[in-house]
Image (cartoon, rainbow, N blue to C red; front, side, top):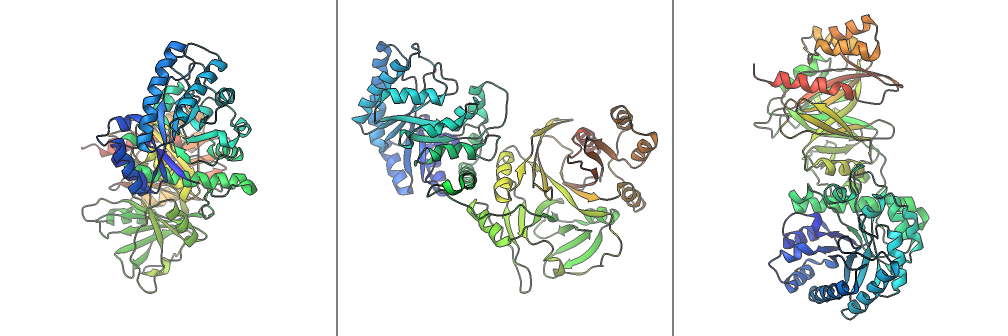
Length: 598
């Protein structure tokens, strides 16, 4: 289906926005009136630019306070409308959004509103313009799409139809199934937006917190299924008001937006099954990764990281035959230390490799979702590893687990029964401008599912955490959004083990000094969980942290931070599925204290 986006979704001037939308691959745009009013270009120049860029101008919006008014006020509505219709003719546009009245409505009567929309339709017809009437969630009298449709039915004018907006419908909890009762030809336009689950007034929620599909909590695939079953054949358009998007690069935001629509089309097609209409885009189907195959740490000097790995019992498995890269492993946990092209860089997580069943298909899916490819020089006899860049720049490798290990030479074979079994999770810190995009990226490209958002109190403010996880828990990616200016935190790699006390004792014997845990923490453990004194004494001795839920227990400890990375050792007992969130404030405070100059 055709794709469109409202210019209000992007930062910059109207010309810059049109270029960004065309470059991303959108078919058309909604022109947000303030963008046109502020533009130095004439309507004719905007129209000519759109023609050169190969995009259509699909919707002029918004026209406000049009119905439910007195006859005296309606005369001014007609005057304003005619001026806009003449402007639309100059732009070459044929559809205008008419919002339900918020400010000037005084008559709560569907027949009056229908009569006024009918007369607006007569005037619009003279300019070959259609009117798409939309129920705003905060409309004075009309705030439900079903009532908006009743008014359009009463108006009974070929130039008057409805606009359906997912935010206005789903934010109010209205049942979207009734959309299927509206004839498809009377649905003149469709606007889509996701949003987080918030408890606040709908106007503020709408103006500041909308998201692109796949980034929030709305069930948009079911919503769009109702619209398509009704017979709608127009564009799928995004209208997202968001403070972050208004401050970020419009080209990047436009690509993020189109990724969200392609993902949504695919989800909707999957949901519709045999009912899927022609033209609804599909993506190559991929299963979520089976696990995390490796984590790469890059820096000018990764020696301090390798010292920590050796203290944790990892084996040096060799140097790469053609690259300045070294491999350490224990069990199925592999850490690659890369000193290439890292002059002046402190060690930090730079790449994560995922074990996927079909790397070629996974890479094609990522390409269709506009994930930037990462070039990698490959010599004869080396595996061709495919990689794309995540929003924060982390390189995401899509490959069959371990097929590249033989390219490392000169190391020792694993000579003992490993205590560490695999990478449990990788915690990736996100900046404010990439957090929501990262949720969409990992959900769409890797088919991971978001878990409920959690907020953790740290010494510098709340830390927002969104876990992206596979259904079988083989892959866990917590994404953390930190308060501005917070120090003492880095990305980290969590390693699963079968005997954390034994590993902690062995690591200490090799010289590891774990992140210290204050004594007050252990006093609090006794009050929280009524643990045996012997257990608490062991936890205290090895700086272990503890959590428990109805399914099981979680024991973990942290290494010191090296550059921008540290390691967490975890032991999950029973069916525990969390991350010890209650312990995060203790860890953050301890890291902050360790980071202070002495």
